[in-house]
Image (cartoon, rainbow, N blue to C red):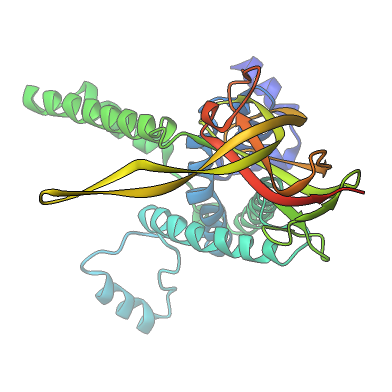
Amino acid sequence: MDDRRSLRLLLPRPVRRLPADLAAMLAVTVLVNVAVFAPIVRETPLRVPLGLAFALFVPGYVFIAALFPEAGESPTADEPAADETARFSGESIREGIDGIERVALAFGLSIAVVPLIGLVLNFTPWGIRLVPIMVALSGFTVAATAIAAHRRWELPAEERFAVPYHEWYAAGRTELLEPDTRLDGALNVMLILSIVLAVGVVGFAVVSPPAGEQFSAVYVLTEDDDGEYVADGYPTEFTQGESAEVVLGIDNHEHETTDYTLVAVEQQTETVVNESAVTESSGEDENQTAVNETVVTDQQELDRFETTLAHNESWHQTHELEPTMTGEDVRIVWLLFPDGEVPAEPTTDDTEYHVHLWVDVEEP
C-alpha cells in the first residue's frame, strides 16, 4: 500500500485529483491510440474492440460529464410531489442526472459528436482520414475531460458526481458469495456465465468478421488537367518511337498481403470466323451461328512492374507506353498475376485479371 501511494505521489497533483471515471476515459483514449498507431499492436485484433468502445461511448461520456458535473438522483414515483414541496419551500430542485441517464446519453451524444467532427474535417486540408480523425477525437476527449474535472472541483464534495465503485463491488460480492438461498446463488452464477458467453460471442464476431469476397483489380487511368485520375482520354494514336503516359492501378481485396506482378505486352491480332462455335437448335432444325474470334499472331513484352500490397491497399504507377509494333489495332494488354508467378509467355488465359487498350501505330 505504501509503495502504491508513493508511486501515486509522483504524478502531478491535477492527475492525482482526477475523478476515477474521467481517468478511465483518458486511459481508454491512450489505449486506442496505441492500438491504432503502435507498429506491432495495430496489426492485432485489439484495435477493433478498443476503437468501437472509444468511438461509441468515450466522447459522449466526457461531454455529458462537462455539462453535468453535479450528482443526481434516480427519479422516483413520489419525486413530483417532492419537487413541488421544494419549490414552495425555496429549496433547490434536482438538477443532476443519475448514472443510467449518463450512460444512455453518452452513447447518443457519441453517435452525434463523432460524425460532426468528421464533417468538420471534411472541409479541412487533412480530410477524413485515420490520423486526423484520431487526433481530433482525442483532442476533443482531453479538452472535455479537463472541463469536466474543473467543473467538478468547483462544487462541494457532497454535490460532485462520483461513480459508486465500492458500493457496486460490495453489492456484487454479497450477491455472489452470500446469497439468500442456494437457488439465488445458482442463478447468479448462471447469469455471470451467460454475460461472459455473450460478451465472448460478440467480441469474436467483431474481431473476426467474415472474410467476404476475395479478388484483385487492375485498371488503366489517365491524368486530366486538374491532376485527377480519370478513366477517359486514353492515347490511341502513336508514331513508332514516341510514347504516351498512362497510369496503372492495382487494388488488393484478397484479405491478406499479396505480391503482385504486372506485365505489359503488345500484340498483333487478327479476327478469325469460327462458324461452328455456337449451334442453335430449334425443333428439328439446327442453325450454326458464325462467331468472330480474336487470335494473337505476335506478342512482345513491353514492361513489367512488381509491388506488394496489404488488404484494401491500392497502387498507382505512371507508365510511359511506347509500342514497337506498327499497324492498326495493336492491342496493349496489362496482365496481373497476384501470386507473383508469371509464365514464360504470359497470355490472358493465364490470369483472370487483365485490361487492354487498342491503339494505332504509324511508322515514322
